[in-house]
Image 1 (tube, helix red, strand yellow):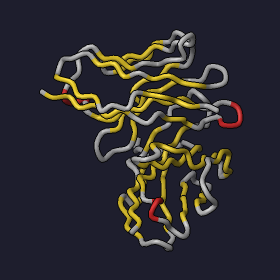
Image 2 (cartoon, chains in turn blue, purple):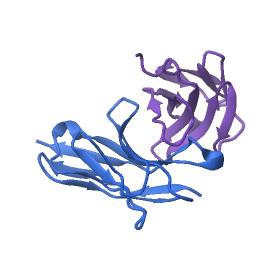
Image 3 (spheres, chains in turn green, brown):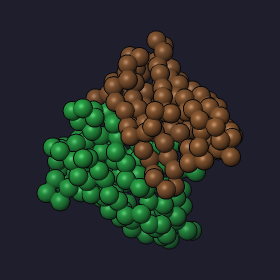
Length: 114
Length: 114
């Protein structure tokens, strides 16, 4: 079945450091891929998405490229800020009988120190 | 446009009781999904409703049920509560359950079972 695997962390970085959070997926066909972010005490917010192979999603300095050859969708940011501290979830959306259902990775806790 | 609202935000119940959680989607959205978030299992899909019909169901026991009203508001019910039902319950809405449509999450209801 469909699934997502992401590095679980926690990840601790200094401000302005480079961030990578790895995400790989297993799915039938080519699902749409997402990164969601969850700040303390809040629900999930969509950070970026990519709907087909080689698409690059980007938002707020974060980027992720849909790589079908490696079934990956790694999240990157060149220079993190304290305000980026949150939990990040990689996800894919089901197709066919599971259309619309989101499959999430376990989440990666990111803490950025000033 | 108002976001997804969930009530109540916090609930404390005891084992054996039942609970009803409510979700109001973004105006015009007809699809509502429910997810359970726990530290041990992460984010797990409960069910999805579209135009008052359950279209998709996750792997949860029959104690977990839901429904959707004609105004797209949704409720989920958990009967005979167990300690393991303690979790953050998240509701998400989208305009339709297509694979590329963003799902907007509410802040969640934090359920504690004593």
